[in-house]
Length: 114
Image (tube, rainbow, N blue to C red; front, side, top):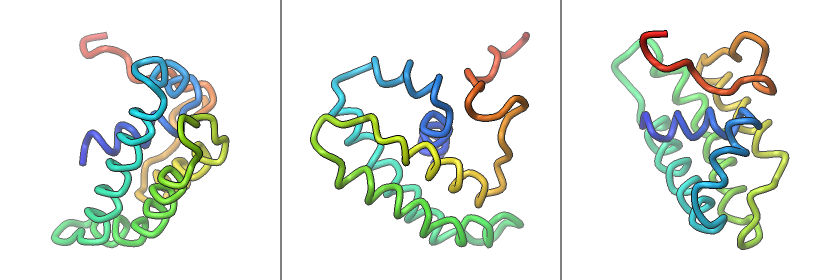
């Protein structure tokens, strides 16, 4: 689940996404994104036992829509501008606030110890 949340953050932040998409062929990355978002949607739908469970359950449909959008994208396409907005909506629904300066400026967390 942590990996999927990290990828959701990458999708939400255009600067991070541009760096990430150079890591492997586009179709491989799209497959990873889609599978992690589908798994995250399932996990959100089944959330229970914590104060955040209701928020995660309510976010499940948004995460599922993002996973479906990724699954139906043209082969090799990683440039859908709607994914960033969808990822931000998912994070917001989960209670994750935009970083200082907003998602457009976000380049990741500083290394630990800084």
